[in-house]
Length: 157
Image 1 (tube, helix red, strand yellow):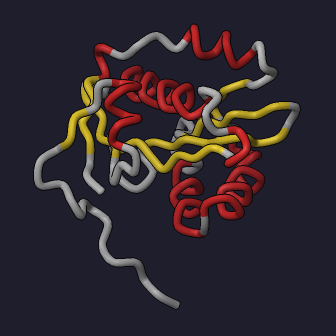
Image 2: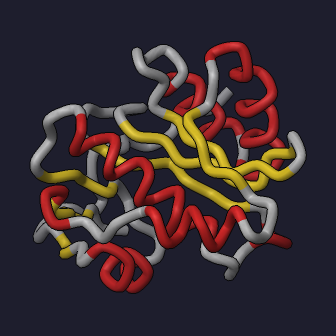
């Protein structure tokens, strides 16, 4: 899976996505430090230990670099940045039953806008699983020669 590059100074506005999701009872917000165990536990259950570890790393940043989608106190999705590497977006995921409703795109935009606000001009989407989604959502382009990327083979127990 290749890494992608995104120009952060030309992002779509997040307001329309926020409003559309709010009408469905979904709120996108920055996770709070005291929610780390809940969010990381949800991520581990839905996506595995590796992503949970990266999510936990995002909680050590100030401000926390993890955004969540929630409805009535229930996590529906998450997105992180500056977790494994500075200037990297990811990991990100949405509950299977909530996919296709704009939650992933909204989480992506929240993170990328936060990265821009912190002074980044470009962002890297590491090991992009759905290149077409990122191309369509934010105009991401593939970084030549970026496969397999920065992730070494995983450790085993």
